[in-house]
Every structure is written in structure tokens, then in C-alpha cells.
Image 1 (cartoon, rainbow, N blue to C red):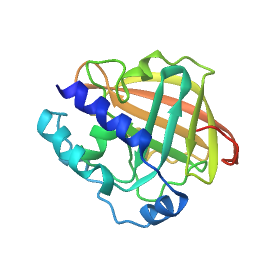
Image 2 (spheres, rainbow, N blue to C red):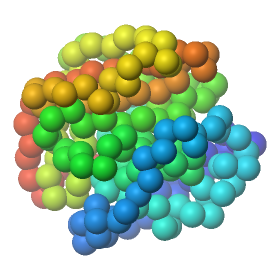
Image 3 (cartoon, rainbow, N blue to C red):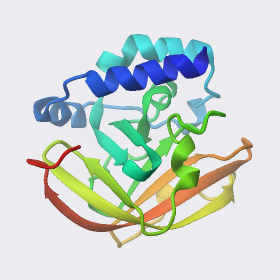
Image 4 (cartoon, rainbow, N blue to C red):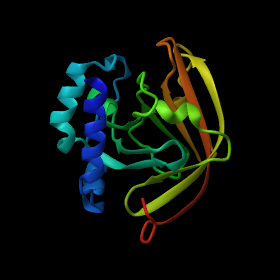
Amino acid sequence: MKHKLVSWMNQHYLKQELTLATVERNQQVASTFDYDSIENLDLKTIVKASQKIQDMPIVGKLVIPTAKIDMPIIKGVSNEGLAVGAVTLAPDQTMGEGNYTLAGNYLDNSNLLFGPLHQLKKGQKIYMTDLEMVYIYVMTSSLTVDSKEIPLWDEQIDEKMLTLITCNLTEQQRYVLRAKFIEKVPREGFLL
């Protein structure tokens, strides 16, 4: 049941008309970044998220064609946001600048949310869009870290990069994927 509802929400998101004006408005929304409030993804949270999907502050889209990932990027850290897509881990992140860091849920179904991340290989492309520009990254590395290690999203990195974080098979570990920024191009004419 849980997997079917998450799949339905993702399909609902894909059919939803997201506009540049909506994204710009959502970038100004005050969001919470309380990591301690995050709980395991249960059916109650998924149902709650399905009722709030229209009101979530979506600030973009994450697409990884080789992993069949196509999901919203939601500003702020919330259980409901993690049930629908990827969440931003800092309030002042800008796509294509510094270390843009996203977290997503790993379910025991490797085709949902961040489950397919484990299939990515070095050199594969990752795309993000804020509906004005498309930001293109290439995967450079992945690692598994203890969940109590210093948060990688707090690193002061001058390099333009993308960090994607998800749970591993156990709650005690995190799978971290790093990608190097390649370029940004106008979204017009780009199929995302």
C-alpha cells in the first residue's frame, strides 16, 4: 500500500503544471530545516503528504534519466516533502552554485524516490531545473557513511557540486552521491 501511494504521488506530481512563477514564489517561502523532526516513512506520513502535495514549496525538478528518477525538489526538510521527492538541506542554496545538497528517502522498493541512486555510475548525468535554467552535473563519486558523521551538506566547498543523500539499507548509514557541475543552459527547448 505504501509503495502504491508514493508511486501515485509521483505520477500526480509529473502531471501537475509547475510554472516559473510558482517556483519563484516558493523560493521565497519560509521553510523549516529541523533534521531532528524527520521520522521513518510510514503510511500515516505518506497519506498526510498526499493531502499536502499541492501546497508544498516546490522549487524545481530533479531528473536522472539513467536511474529513472523524475521528482520535485521541495524547499525545506519535512517528512511530507521526503514522501514526495527530494528536499533541500539549507535555506540559502542556489542551483549551480556551491554545494547544492538534497536528501531523499530510500524505500525497500528500488524504483521509488531515491531508491535508484544506488544504480548510478561515475560519469552519468544528473539534471536539475528551476524552470528557467537546466543545471547539468556529472556523477563523480559515492560513499557510505555513518549517520552520526559530520553532515556533508555543512561542508564549506568552493567547488560547484551536487550532493544527494539517502538512507542505506540500514538506518545507521547514509548513501552519499557527489556530482560535479558541468554547465547551465536555458530550459527552453530542453525536455525536462
